[in-house]
Length: 177
Image (cartoon, rainbow, N blue to C red; front, side, top):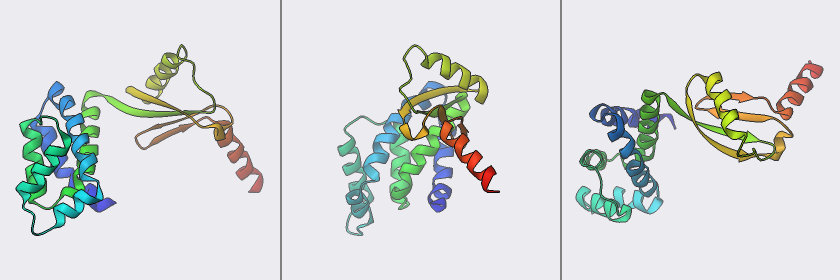
């Protein structure tokens, strides 16, 4: 939803500007935990209830997360709840994660392969992909037998599809034209 992304951007950027380096990396798990709880429909219903104060919503959220939160995360949470933007918290966490990773020159990558990638081959594959995309990648591997062969890599909004299925699809489109 574009509207949530638009709402979330200033919050994520403000938090990103208030922290540096390793501090930012430490906030990512805290935000993700809060976002997971905030995304629950029961939590949304509680936050939307006019009989429940912002302080009570914050207490419930922090109680469910059960981890000590950085004061900057607590301040962000308070601001988000007081402005009735709890629904945007998962998007805020996602955008903050992307901002931190882009600043550090890393990206998350999903590698889909038709067959399991051997543990000895994975570092070579990741190194080749890092060279191709021009940044450090945090790779996760998934097996997708529908690819038939080859790999499909998703890094942010970039897709590198060298699978047999993609090649067959290209041939089908060329023959149909």
